[in-house]
Amino acid sequence: MQKGYEYSLFKRTGRDFDPEFKPELTPKEMLDLGVFCGKYMTDCKKEFPKSWFEKAKLSPKKKNCDLNYFKIRASMPLSYWKMKGWIYKEDPRGWFQWYCRYYMGRRIKKEDERQIKRWKAFKRHFSAVKNNCKKGDFNCRRKQKQALLHWAYDSRKL
Image (cartoon, rainbow, N blue to C red; front, side, top):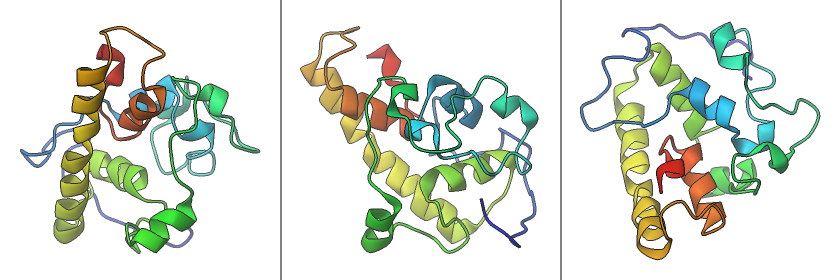
């Protein structure tokens, strides 16, 4: 995922989160459900626990959006994220890379604040789905529901 980058873990894995950051899914759960067309975590298995990859829906060669829980592409390319200024130099692959490392216990105060603010702002999509879909309707707003999964919101409940 990233060569030559090292970081320290300051908190317990999966605990001691900022009180404003309450993800509904762990990185492992997200990978098991199917996110980012299976491509995102195919080259970093040594960085994270083996258990994260036991049931992960991954596609090492190319994106396969059929692996996504809602079977739809719901993310912009990395070039778009860079253009928007959403990429932090320590996490060149964006929010999910940050979340995985945060979950493991890494903390970078300013970057954590920025990413948590972005995560909170994404919740507006939760309300849009809830207000426009019947509960349990798998086909209603699938792209938004998949995007919510990418941000650790459990849209399967909607």
